[in-house]
Each structure stands twice: as C-alpha cells, then as structure tokens.
Image 1 (cartoon, rainbow, N blue to C red):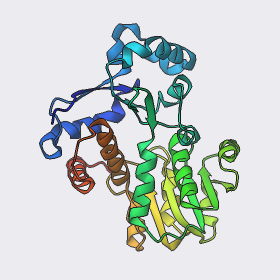
Image 2 (image 1 turned 45 degrees about the horizontal axis):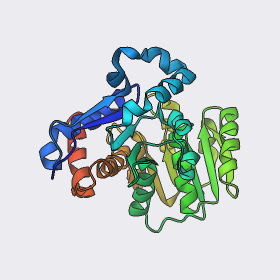
Image 3 (image 1 turned 45 degrees about the vertical axis):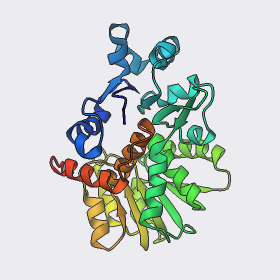
Length: 308
C-alpha cells in the first residue's frame, strides 16, 4: 500500500497538532503509517507571504488571504486537516458546507468527493457521539445533559446531546451573559430543546438530575470549575462523565467520577478516537483497529504525563 506522506494543515498555530504528529512518527511501525509523514501549516506553506501575528488578529485579512491562495494551496491535496482557528473562515469560503457542520461551527478535516469537490467533516463530533454510545449504551437520555464552556467544542457537545435525544441541556459558563448569548444562537438550530444557563457557582446547587456531563473547559485556566465539577452531586448514579482535556490522562474530575463508580470518557480516549477517524480519512485503505490505536496512544501519552 502506497501512502501519501505530506498533508496541509489549515491552521496558523502548529502546537495543537504537535502531540499527534509526534505520536504518529514515534509509532509509525505499529500504526502502519509512513515514518516520514509531514503536516505543514498555512504559515509554513506560504512562508514570507504571511504575517502570522497580523492574520491572527484580523479575520477579514485572513479570509482574503485564504481566498487568494486557495487554489494554489489545495490543488495537489486530496485531504486537508483543519485547525480550530481557521475552521470558521473556511465555512465562509467553501461553496457547500453540511448543515451539521454549520450547526457546530467546527470542521477538522476536508477530503474530496469523486468529482473533486471538497467535503467537510467534524470527526470530533463523530468521536464523541460514538464514544458515548460505546461507553453507555443504555444511557437515560430523558434526563438532563450538562455541557461546560463556550466555543466550538461546546457546540459539539450540545449537538451530540441533541442527537442522543436529551430534552434539557444546561450550559455551564463563567458569566451568565455569555451563556445567554450562546443559548440564543443555539436555539436557532435546535428548536425543541430546553436550554438553561448556569454560572460555575450554580453548579453544586443543582438537583441530582443529570445523566451526561461533557466538559470542554481547560482546567489549567478554570481551576474553580474543576473543583465544582468534581463534586458531581448533579449527576445520577448511571450518568456518564466526558472530558475533552487531553492531559493529564486522569484529572481530578475523572478520578472522582471513577471513585464513586460513574463511567467515564477521558480526553485521551475521545481525542484519540478523533485522530483514528482522521487517519481513516487521510488513508482510506488504512486498517489499524481503533482499540489498537488507542492502546498505543495511551502508552505514548503515559510516557510524558502532565498533572493538573
């Protein structure tokens, strides 16, 4: 099997992909991947044409730059990874984007259809959905789902909760005004859902009525939320705890959930599943099992753990 070795990552910041690429290089033999696989960012491809710092603060200039260079950037590509920073801009540039991608406001990979048109995907959404089904196949979706944070990952969590059938979704945010603004936008896409807004301080005063928690907040930044979430008094005994923090492999919230017997999905599991789906898009004939991929991924991350 002949595999391509160079891919474009439409992002200005290479750091989110560094852990992933380091793993793919270190485990190329076990993963049956080319050892020389490369992922080049937008800045690396366009080089001196770009002032990255300026583009990071000027969305209109970023959009214009992408439009002007789109054909030269993508002509030889069959698959393109997409970073969170450029995902919203691409939604305005691409001629056709699926409604579900527009709803979540996030895409993480593009590939070509048989007519060479670009197809947008959000493998993180697929990963979270499939992981929840796998971890809790009998999850009671008639209760309440809690989703923390703002931004695209929050919308992914909300979309999955809606798809699973939750009638009530409580959005947990630092400031109520920010949450109310986000909920106003969410209601345009999900008409029948009862959205409610909670500030972090309100969380521990909630009834014991939740069966799903999806945390999208970085605990290194929001330490107060980490403490409040760890009480888990708002989650029923059969509830599922999901976290989108990659490291550490097991943080305080995950530890507390396991201590009281709640099923959990740690960030490394969900994001590892996402990467497995990305690789299957990049290499359609790639045949490594998800369980094998996650085992190698966990071992790689465990060799350099980070505590929160």
